[in-house]
Length: 83
Figure 1 (cartoon, rainbow, N blue to C red):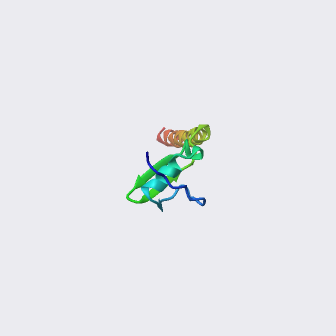
Figure 2 (cartoon, rainbow, N blue to C red):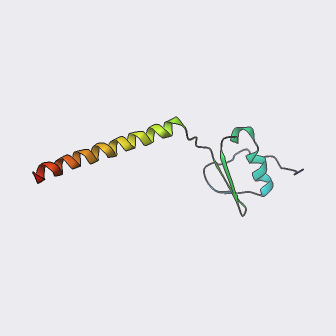
Figure 3 (cartoon, rainbow, N blue to C red):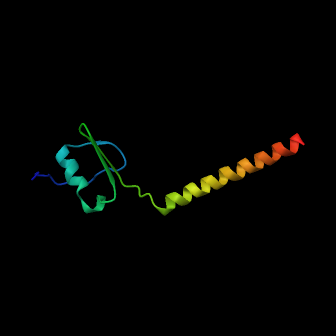
């Protein structure tokens, strides 16, 4: 069994910070980070806590609708100048 040290109290998420492998394991195994993405690379860790859910999908839908409307309007303008 791995002896893990307690996680730091003032953990900064969504950015790369220095930590040992043991600290990374202690942080990644905490219940509040169950749905987070955890990365470790050569003494650096990153915990991404931004949820991706229905709100993210709605944002993408809005963007797709705006691009579609812009393309249609532009296409209609070009069609009217050609005729």
